[in-house]
Length: 416
Image (cartoon, rainbow, N blue to C red; front, side, top):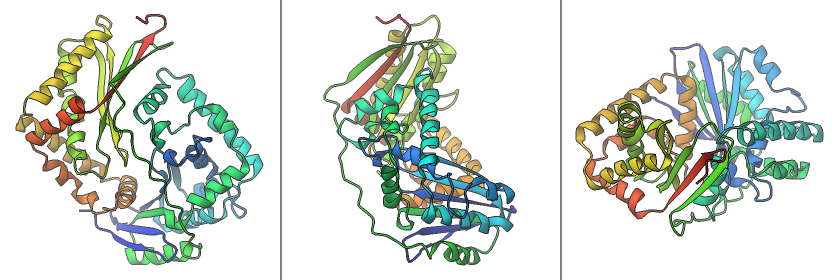
């Protein structure tokens, strides 16, 4: 059981504190309620770009990393569709250093033209490394565009292209900072061996002086629930081998039906004993690799089956075999024993994850964003309530009643 206290400061900052006396370390995560879905349409990639800018320093601290490293701290950050997170692990005796640094850049970030230019080059180079020059690196450009035609999930987190990143100016980043990087748009979670009430007092001393501002509400744009018809895009590229992505719409992260949809991915391709791996990779050797996962976005997400045919099989044969398993899920009840094994494995994995203080603060802040911080202890119970009947109903809803999109990468000139 992960116990915690929580409080909302006068300026709107939401704070959650967990005591873990088993370690001399503290961890903290600041979740800003801003992701690539909040990018200006003319500057996609802005949220990710701004993640880099948050390390450029302030007037009092020109280099964020220097005082942190002197205090034996370690830090990193990540941006996704819905959120941007900044996390630090540090000896508890130096927790105040981490809090001071985070409070300072929340309110006093120095957005000089020189730093904007430097980080723009870094992000554009990252775009080339991870997208343009990476095999299958453009997959999310095709998937996002096809599956979210009228929604801010329409572009990947990295952005649509380097031209839009190159055109971001100093006024653009200043406006983005003032709009989203403020106490009322942030959740701070801390794990520390100290008394949580004393830690909360320290948090107040650093963060409560930061003025709160009126939040501009996020625009409400509905997901396009139908792709018109199920569609396929074939992309010829310099990839090591053919690859297949089959995408379906699933409920969003706050939806009670998310759990049954998520369990579909475990039944199909979680581990070597899963249906697709056991049959297509291990037994029949139709696939050289296969995976299935949900994007777990706050709004309606995607279930994606990602597969690569073996040397002696074709994409057509592989796709047919995958749909045979999908049909079986839709037509027959999942065996309770199979479901129980998956749930036990999931519970074990969650328990192992919760031993990390960093994982705890990242998860705690995210569950708070979902308005259910108690889910850090209780969410496994929602999975356990799923029945074979619900799994079958969800399989039909996702695979039969909903639209699909298929992306096919063909090696070089093998396109047919």
